[in-house]
Structures are given as C-alpha cells and as structure tokens.
Image (cartoon, rainbow, N blue to C red):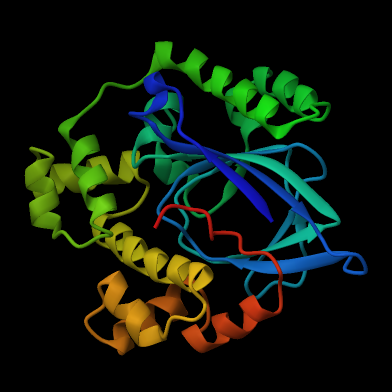
Length: 275
C-alpha cells in the first residue's frame, strides 16, 4: 500500500487537513481482501480513480459498491472495506467543521454513512470523476481535486471561534472537557452543542470519545508491536476497561479481535492518517 500525503494549498489549510493519494496492488494470487475501517474523527471526501471499493457493515454479509466520489460524514459505526485487484484513490480529510464550511451541508445530515458526492454537489463532480479515470499519475488527480476545492472557497461559511476550539480538541485527542471547549468557542453549553451538531454532526462528548478511540486504533495499525497497555496510556485512557468498551462500541469487537483481523489483511487503511 503506497500512500502519499500532501499539505493542501495555503488557501485550503483552514478547512483541509491533508490530501492523500492511495495506491494498492494486491499480491498475485490474492484477488480481494477485506479490511476493517472503524470511525475516525475526520469528515472526508474520496475519489476512486479505477474500480471503487465495496463496503459493508460489521455484521453484514453483502458488500455495496461505492460511487466514484463519496462524501464521508461523521462516522459512528465500523465498516468493512473490500478491495479487488488494485485501488487508486484520492482522499481529502477536512479539519473539524471544514466540510460544513466548504460545502454548507449540515453534518448531522451525513451522519454515519457515505453519500454519492455527485448527488449532493452537482454535475461538476461528473466531469471530475470522468477525468480521474484517465489520469496517468495520481498526483495529477490530486491537483484536479485541489482545484475543485479551491473553486468552492467563494461560497464558504464564516469562521467562528468554535472552529479553532475544535482544532484544539482534535490536537489534544479529545482530552478537553465540554465546558472548556465551549468556553474556547465563546458559546454557552447549549449553543456549543447545537453548533457541534451542525458543523461536526454529533454531540461533543461522543466526538471526544471517537477522537480518543481513533488514536488508539491508529496506533495499533502503525505500531503492531506495541502492547495494548501502552496504546491505552498513549491514547489517554485511564484504564483498560474504558478502552475495551470503546472498541466494542466503535470497532464492534474487543482489541484482541481487531489484532487478529488486521493479521488477516495486508492493507492498513488508517495507517497514514495523522495520529
């Protein structure tokens, strides 16, 4: 799996965390693989430059082929991702609230699902999707996607203190109380919760839990030799039981099962996301 992570154009940096190109070529004799994909704290936009992946819920048997461009809103539930043969894709990860500010879509409307970007953003995506099927190098596609995002800046939602407060929460991996984050946002608790639902898509306590869980999961993908005790400490869990509880909620299984499932696939879907 080859991932290149790019710093976005300076004008996009208040909204976009990074833009990545992803290339996967499965080993000969392995026609397809299924990899776990628990929730991350990022709302994302995905462009598939060849055959899109297929996706299923953790307890579902049927996989659904994804559109060529996908808006991935705030996630609560784990999914499984099936890759056949090879994968070429471009991924945009937004800062907290960044997708709302660029596209103007209330994030609670995208909660826990992926949506065809063309249905939500119009025919311009059709042209981009067609061009991406014919690119020779993924960096060419990255530049095309970046140009599309820059064109949206004329219609952005205004910046609020909330947006910088949520970036602080992101960098602290959820280790900031609701009261402290609301204070940084210059909002009352009720105003903060309403804004969080609109711009993040869920209540702030749940988002903080996903931030902590996601750090633990990405540490497992990046450092398989680390003990779960060390991962829990690094992610900010006070005890193992709280971490196990969050894995059961967000990954659908306990940490030891995730370890076995990762051994069954050569792909680490979240290894290159920032920790």
